[in-house]
Image 1 (cartoon, one colour):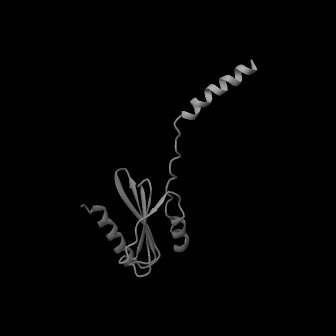
Image 2: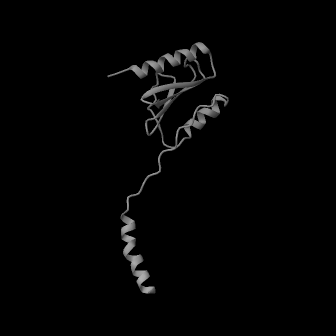
Image 3: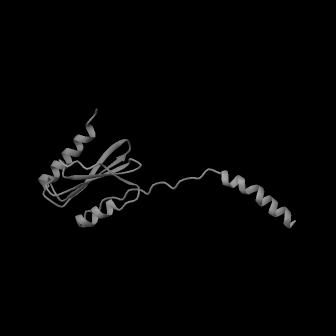
Length: 125
């Protein structure tokens, strides 16, 4: 019997090795927490796994990041940006794009950022 168990184990190993592997889904993007300081929250965003940084345009005082699944993206302002410091987040929700954010700077500048991001949602090539 003992040899038979070893034989059945050897026969089943190749079958197990061919089984498709399932990849773990990307972790869900976290919601913004505007009670956290700008520096802490921007560091949390940048430290997320599965995050893709957009190429930085020298003329724009923003950093853009997206989750690699395309469901969430973030805009982090840099000095000189309207409303700096501010962080904006866009999420795909029910077929629409929802924009939220944390205003650490002026309301007027924050409103400019919101208008800018809303304009990007409607932009088509």
